[in-house]
Amino acid sequence: MYKKGNKINVKITNVTPYGAFCRAEKADGLIHISEVSDYFVKDIKDFFDIGDEIEVEVLDFNTVRKHLKLSYKNCHPELLKNDDGNEIQEKSPSLEKSLNINYLIDFLHYLLKNCKYL
Image 1: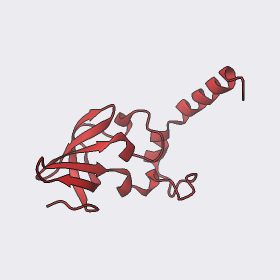
Image 2 (image 1 turned 180 degrees about the horizontal axis):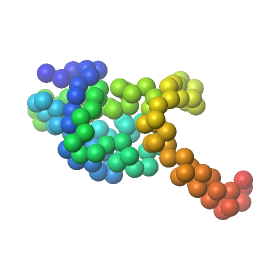
Image 3 (image 1 turned 60 degrees about the horizontal axis):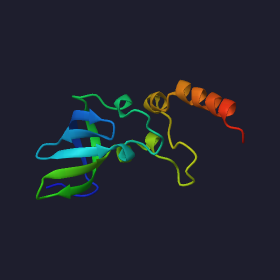
Image 4 (image 1 turned 90 degrees about the vertical axis):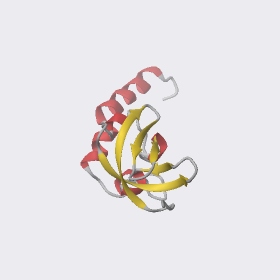
């Protein structure tokens, strides 16, 4: 039915701090927060809303429970790091939104103010 590596379309049914639950044609699934992006994800709700229809990659399928483990980032190269772990492969508006530049600037200001080793 579902094989590892297949790309499928799912509908988001619930969003929690640790992942997004979704429904495929014949199974339920979970996109764990670690499978949303290689970059830090502060709030998964920046990526998904209930009712969104998205493309994901199947990581695993439990035939007994009819449960899918899914990856969002594997279908979106802009969310993956290069082999060196430093550079973005492609730029997109969704990545810029997810990185939330204002949050990063505030965090850097906090570090500079409060860390005696910097």
